[in-house]
Length: 423
Image (cartoon, rainbow, N blue to C red; front, side, top):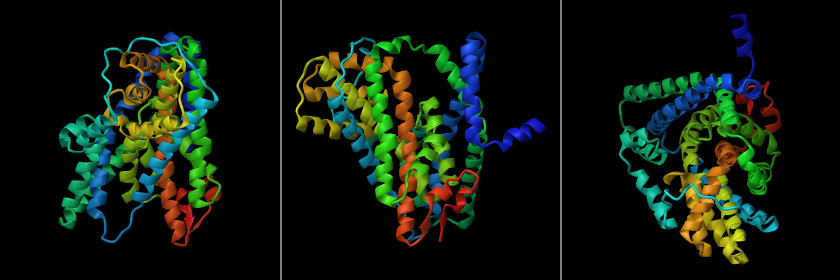
């Protein structure tokens, strides 16, 4: 019991870092024996994926039902930031690909997959997901559909009896508490995921794609550490890095290892609560961001497409490159509506340069080879940015209303997050 009390006194981030370190040590020293511990990773990710759709449904439904007339939200600002961040990520990837052109050895392994024919098809799939059967949406973790039905149900319950609203709110609080219990097991889950990653995926297959990986990861790090902080600074006019690093540390780390924006929704909502954000806003913006805020996907689509262009010796002019940035951003926003995510949108971008579908699918095959790292960094960037932009929009609104914001003081881990904004 003494050991358990000492463990509980340690912050969750430090606990996760301990789990990460233990996982690496065990995987390197006793890989065969450590494989039995990968079950912790599977259980952790499975629990997050299972609870996330129910959490979103009840949280959004309760927030809409309890919403007071005239109460303003920041959804327009957040959606604008999502779209801006995704476009800029695609643009940075295009610019970087021109400065550091890379080619690749095409590979097979994706021929049996079917990619969407054009951007209209991607958007159509995304729109059709809105009217998906609610039970099917919950079962398949279709968050656009879950959000749509939760909003409709919430609006329908606006005039319900107070006792009904209280019941829904109690369900929402109960699910949120269950999420808290699951997240407490994050250190063990991360340990299992790290062991699985190290013992199952050697680095040998990645060596030949070193330059391509360096460009991909470099672009994502540049977006996370330069572009996103600039966007935050323009909005709140304060040093953005305390907020950026907090989002990367508490959201990005778990997203990196789970490689699932959906599984990271409960983690992000818990972080938003810590930051003292408006529940009515983040209950909608976080699941929406997991669907349409895809800066990492825009980077992946742009870099791999231009790598294919360089490999085939195709000349690209500046206007076409800009069109690629826009196309990558639009397609990235619809990535969740396509099985295989961002990788299966590469043939669509390749068609812009007249690259045949069979060659484009070989590029997708390369994507699956490097997916161990590419998908991890992509998910970490996407998921942490959901919280970052949600917080940015709210802090900007509070500053306009005359409240004082001191980020440096607010993000001192020893201080409670509720002291973030002082009137």
